Amino acid sequence: MTTTEKTQQYVLQTYGRFPLTVVRGEGTTVWDDRGREFLDFCMGIATCSLGHCHPALTSAIAEQSTKLMHCSNLYDIEPQADLAELIIEKVVGQPGKIFFSNSGAEANDGLIKLARRYGVASGRDEIITFKASFHGRTIGAMSATGQEKIHGNFGPLFPGFVYADFNNLESVKAAITEKTAAILLEPIQGEGGVNAATPEFLAGVAELARENGLLFLLDEVQCGFGRTGDLNGYDTIVPGLKPDGISWAKGMGGGFPIGCFYVADEHAALLGPGSHGSTYGGNALACAASHAVISTIIEEELTANVQARETQIREVIESWNHPAIMKIRGYGLLLGVGLKVDALEVPEGKVASIMLCAELIDAGLLLVPAGPETVRLLPPLNVKADEVEKALEILKHTLDRHLKS
Image (cartoon, rainbow, N blue to C red):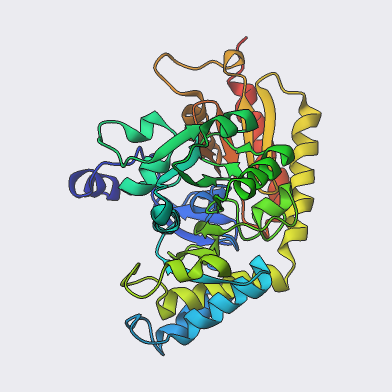
């Protein structure tokens, strides 16, 4: 029985999988079970920040696995404390506390609990989020997500979420009531189509939160830890913001599952002993892996490479003046290529972005959709110029083949 057959027979079919079985990876390259080689510009959906099997990450995991992999959070855990210090001192740069989880959805659930606890004394239990947002698949994070397709047939959702229009400050103002406790947003909506907040909007939301005594919460699960060309995605858009809470995951573990959220010092007492927990969250092995990844990003100054490769990608794609490309959205190496679907031959019943990603697999390049009309470029932060050049050649050739005559 093949891996595909086993997957279909034994694994719950919650994913629309492409017909590919990846068995090995190194750097920016992966190989499948047939020995075929691919450039990976999906990277576990912005997760493998250093590429596949980076020596710093594999060494950290191997070394820590011989010492201690897991113990209870009833005790102090040295790698956990070290990682929290690194994030507070080198990434956030302002006083606060970290809670470690296993995923981005869990991290966002933590921010939701923080907002509820913050507002309970004054009877405020609503959180403003945004249309086209994505915050995860748990029932809490799903309820915060402003996409009906994510909500489908799972109701009733958790109450207390109001969806405003992204990049529309007047919509946010109109959504604020005496019940509002917090505003939660992604600086760049990844799953929603790689929609970046404008500087005016992001700064305006922060000011609205301050003026109305609301928590200002940022979901950096996809755009954090160097992905945008700065250690924080929000700093790429509005440098110097001071969020009350931040969630992370994806790239912080380089492929090893870990997430966390930050709470500013003035609100940290809201979540005391017994208020939140996770059996596996912050275990020694995950924290050692994450420390290696974040340290490498900082020490090797990979944000400079991210900025250079973004410039390269934009200049090359814009030079094509391609009839099937509408716009490049995003920052750094979280880029969405917006498609002019009318310019492409898309078979009836097919989705343009999914069709294109499937065709690119056959051409040797892995990309990921972001909605029906956008494909994402998510290479590792240390991707090389020649690898970007090769990937873009494959993308252009594939687009050319599908142009309407």
